[in-house]
Length: 185
Image (cartoon, rainbow, N blue to C red; front, side):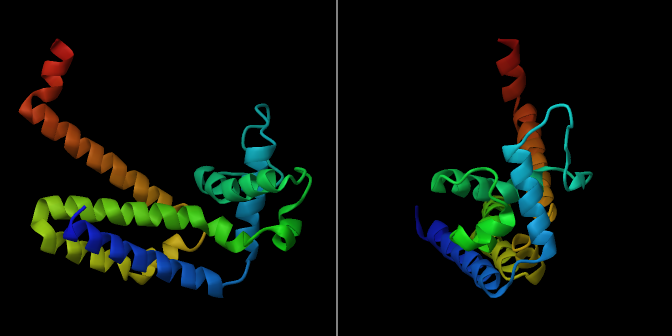
C-alpha cells in the first residue's frame, strides 16, 4: 500500500463523504419507501409460487436494487430483535438512520466501481491516467446522484464494468495461451 493507493483511497473517501453529506441533507421519499418496503418483503417473505410479485406489484425492472435497498433494513430489524410485522414506515422511528441504511449499498457499489475504474485506468495509462479518471469519477455530479438514490443505474454500471473487465482478462489470458494450456492438461 504505497502512495498511489493511499491517494486513490483518499479520493474515494472524499467521494463517500460527498455521498454521505447529500444523504444527510435529504428526506425519505415515496420512491425510497417503495424500494425499502419491496426489498424487505423480498428478503423476509419470499414466496416461490408468487415469484417476484409482491404487494408492491410485479417488479419488472430487476430485483437487485430492491434487494440491495432492503437488506440493511432487514439486518437491522433482526439485530434489534423486532418482529417481521414491523413495517418500514414504523422502522423510521426505531432504526438508526433508515435513509442512510437504505442508500448505503448503492454508495458502496459506487466506491467499488470507482476503485475498479482507477485500477484499470492506472494499468492502461499510468498513475496520471488513473488519477485523472478517478478525479472525473469522484467529482461527477451524475455518479454521485446515481449513488445516493436507490436505483438500478449504479448496479448496472458496476455489472457492465465487471463483464468488460472479465472479458478483457479472459481474452488476454487466451492470447497468451494460459487458458488453453490449463484446459488441455
